[in-house]
Image (tube, rainbow, N blue to C red):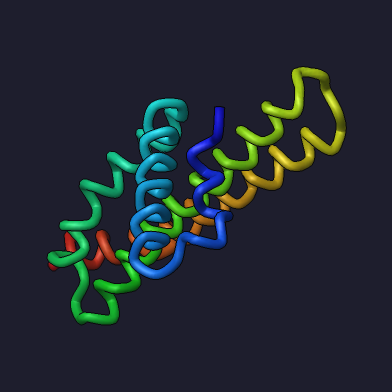
Length: 131
């Protein structure tokens, strides 16, 4: 049985066909993260709430973009963390210091993205609330 991801490495896939295949794989990645990772579901749900709020809270286009970018950073970091955890878990169930280190670094990436999210959103919401 051939893996559907093999199509991406075939030299015959070029142009629009390659773009369509890549988009399909990206959609599969989002679906897998949603299905298998509770943290991703939580962060994606929060992003769905905060993205429209950015247009009310942000006082300028640049401010709105900053609020949107930090939302995207959290999703990006969680996707990378989930990918790291998936690969480490695929390697095997045995404990290894490097496996733990990889997972910890992935977790730290999410932590940094959440800190940036809070650094942008807390003062913005406070200022918006104060009128």
